[in-house]
Image (tube, rainbow, N blue to C red):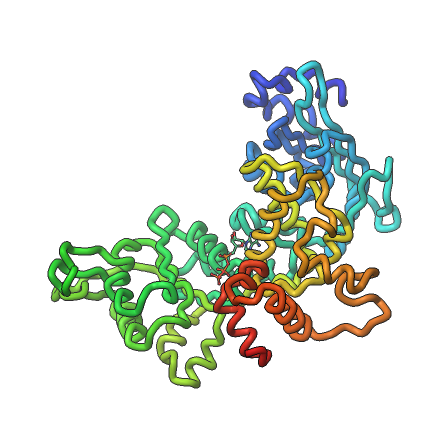
Length: 465
Ligand SMILES: Nc1ncnc2c1ncn2[C@@H]1O[C@H](COP(=O)(O)OP(=O)(O)OP(=O)(O)O)[C@@H](O)[C@H]1O
């Protein structure tokens, strides 16, 4: 079969993969194995019927897309990056599917032309490494689920069961116009979910407008949201269209809604109830058809109890509630995210880095990630620039992480003999050490990938100031 593929005229950079589907279909749909063919740029050229069955995907949803965008297939990824053969097995615990994987690079006189991957179901007992032991991964079944799920939430990389459930709910929420309150710590992907909901909704061709309620000075917020008429106040030299009007027919994403001043909460409530508003200084009511999504890392119930957030608005915004999982509670996502960030930064910058050592993965999987995925993303950007070798090692990590490894040389944060501390205790330790080293909230925030406000809040919480 390999020679048929190598000789196939589609594997030629000029005509590369021009409508080869029909020809491949005739050839490969009768095979017992799942077959996936990828070209030299990483785009999927063909997946046969069996592949679609095994991974519950639809051919049309993945064809001509980069394989690493629509699958989390680490064998394929390894083979593509190293242009090498990979023989191994993948185990998908929840579906109890054990899959034998064989990935072959197609190399001819033009050089690397792509990959052909074969997949066959193994019985449970046989789910051991097969072939040349280049690769063996125990993947969660969620990888499979995500093959179908992520086609709608393309940018959200996860194989965590709870995140998967959240994304399923988000998919349902997308079909209706109810308000959605997206909760979760800073950097967990609330905005990504909001955009995913919009992109899946019937409003997807209309605007998605974001307002960061915490970042706009209080005296400007009303005019930002509702616009103003010329001459409404000193400096209003022209009529201004606000965010509500700009989002007409689409979605308005109120980020950091917990920071919305109380007097503005009343106005938001009115738009939600009456579906109309006036520009500042205006008398004409403007009808508005806008779907409201909001997000917060704050505990709104607590703010309601303290009188800082209106209960009626809370109920209005919270018709559907989604709470994202902090990164520290989904360590299984770390290797996937590392892979994702290496791939995406490699496209943007000239970096040597191709992989991350197991020890580093171990450290990262045990770190508390106060800044969540944003912190990991920033760390990877820095490492991709600074690291001169192909693999990121412990020595390449910033000191607040490498120290964690040195303190416990077996396992980064606690050895198997030690009892575990609570996550809060680890967080306290890390914030304390970072503050000692970096002295200011700003520098500490930068090093940890969180805002100076978060550092200050945590420092206060743990009694450091
Ligand atoms: N699951 C994920 N897969 C890939 N990238 C992610 C994921 N989650 C978050 N990110 C990335 O991390 C960064 C932070 O995500 P996002 O802005 O959506 O978080 P957030 O919860 O809205 O943060 P904040 O509360 O600070 O506004 C973004 O660059 C986003 O692309």
